[in-house]
Amino acid sequence: MAKGVRVIITLECTECRSNSTPRSPGVSRYTTTKNRRNTTGRLELKKFCTHCNKHTPHKEIK
Image (cartoon, rainbow, N blue to C red):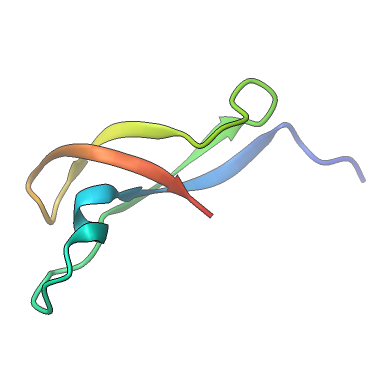
């Protein structure tokens, strides 16, 4: 069976991930799809983080 061109990826907030306080509420994550042929590198989008309560860069995680 052939693999599809579009893959499901997870975007994670970079500011929540770097926050090391023990009382942090969590990490904001979004799921989306990307075209594997057109976008070969890691995707980075500016999305709204509910924990930071502002728009922050979200990077693709494995």
